Length: 485
Image 1: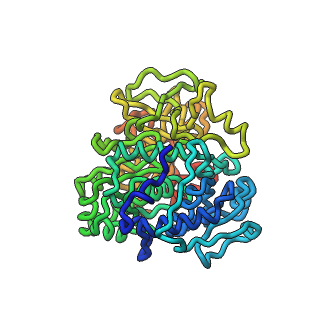
Image 2: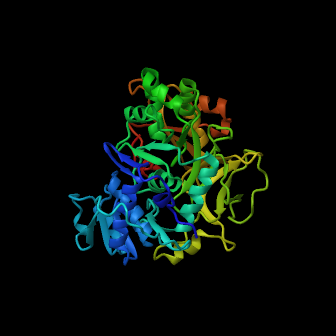
Image 3: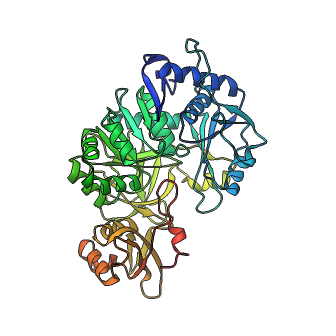
């Protein structure tokens, strides 16, 4: 099988590979440093990586993969209980960290390896590649219980990154800029391993800022990856920041993921720059499933078409009957299969079995509609975003987008709550643009009814100072039930 990182041996030695702030590595330096890590961890089965936004994290993960072991990225912001669960469940033999990095007590009993720029740039090394061997164990968010470790094989990494290269025309000439955390698949797999597989470069901002985005795109970067909260900040800054406007105009590709980008922010960015942000859809267990193609239509509110090699279908509520009407209106659960999928939840054969249909389709739990031309629009999670009201199946996402088009709404989330007449009623959680002049229920209900349909209007309204979000900017809807409006 072909290696994950052919550029480590094939790219010109002085070609830039990684840059974090003012610290940068060429491909020769990356090959030497990651090869040295590989030599030190080669006997291990699983290796934890203290995943700070630094080049040491990138080098550490690449070294673990070269050695044929599985990397377990650890979120430095995890609480003691969650971190203890992950470490106990994955049982890593080693932990990688930057020199001088202080690690929590729960890691004290694990042998530590500091990642440095050691290694002989002229030495040769071989990459251990087994398509089905575990590459990463990435833990899910744990919204329905303790986090589960999704075991991602090397085949899944290669399949996703090569499919994205096809969809995005991604090449070794591209320079990617982002400020994403490196303990999720978005920032780590797409944002670090993606450029390295292509032989291109990545410039990590360390911490996202619109100033950093403008600086790097105006200095030759060609691609930007972000999450909706980042693009919202960009949209807010554009009217007063000509350097940022110029930078986005220069970018070859602007990509948003991890949650839906509100249509309002799509339109503000497009109006200011003439450039469309494209969206893709994936999750920890599947890596990437769909994307708007670089040579396709960037249709706001959609996540494009299935990537090469990915099978995708929508099914009815029984979880087995395929939806046959791709009319842009019929809601079904997304199921996928392909080489991009994980192989198991670590130590959880029960959860693994429950996640797949008998004929091998993975149950994503995401609800979507599909247009006649194949474009997919995610309308929410089955558990939290599918609202059954008055005999209709309604996705929370389209109502949230409609609310965000109202000038008095800065942020919005939509949930359902029990209703004796309707089954469920639609509840809007809104952060006002002006806290002193919050929008009222009647005006928001009328606003939504005009744009969508009367049965999709909110029946209850809560005003909040902020919406609860996780590290990737996703709204934590389960936390809203305990929030006072």
